Length: 185
Figure 1 (cartoon, one colour):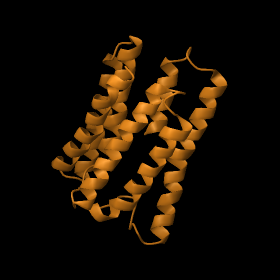
Figure 2 (cartoon, rainbow, N blue to C red; figure 1 turned 135 degrees about the vertical axis):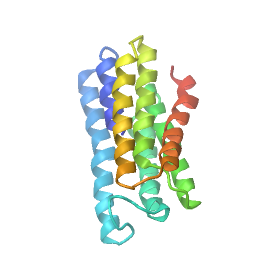
Figure 3 (cartoon, rainbow, N blue to C red; figure 1 turned 90 degrees about the vertical axis):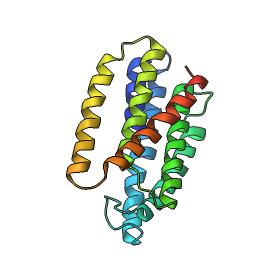
């Protein structure tokens, strides 16, 4: 969810960057992290690499995660290099580590919740952004506990994931953001 993290970040860090640069980055981030993955999903479905948007098996997750890791590499090194926006660069690098971990688990036939990976990484980045700019974290924590709780409940209710898969997704979303924060905080 780099586009959500970027919108949040730029709503807090308004004075550091030119508005035209912010709009330019946001458009690129939305294209590369939202629109292109949707297009790639359609292609993977047509090629019968994936059966549905739910990616029910660990095997089905391999290509989408591999393609997403390539997208994150492009975003992190070409759209948002460290010299341009260090905070978002390292968020994307942490997201890349999360995706690669999810990919490695999928290759090992272990399924982790991609939803939980994305939301927890974004949640941790928002908390760290608030700490960086001296903004209270209470609102972010409340909103994301509600979002993650609702999402986890729905994934369990739909039998899309087990509790173990949700917890794995949560952990591999949060840990890379914590480990990489010393580079930009």
